[in-house]
Amino acid sequence: MAGEPQSDCLFCKIVTGDIPATIVRESETTVAFRDINPQAPTHVLVIPKAHYPDAASLAAAEPLIAADVLREAGLVAADEKIVESG
Ligand SMILES: [Zn+2]
Image (cartoon, rainbow, N blue to C red; front, side, top):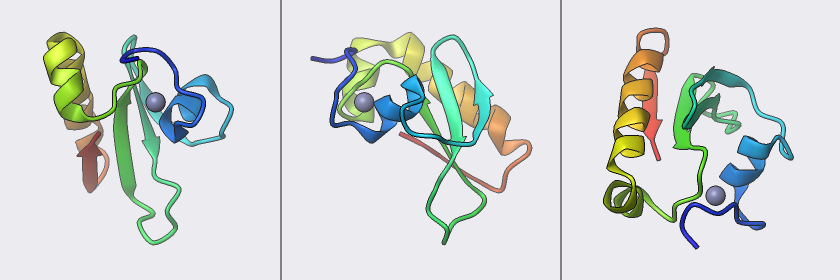
């Protein structure tokens, strides 16, 4: 169900701390963390703390949180070269 943590979801486990990640920014609704892919050491992902299957579902269900994700991505971009929302 949208918004509920999913036990098989990597992002949810990062939000809850079950999987360690390098958090670069955090807001009430979003977490920005460094992508663990070693081929992209400067890659940062911004995700909502609540689980959504994809960005379209998030935008449809929670447009304010979707806006938060975009705003946080813009803030991270001030310090990072590559940012991807998702
Ligand atoms: Zn999730």
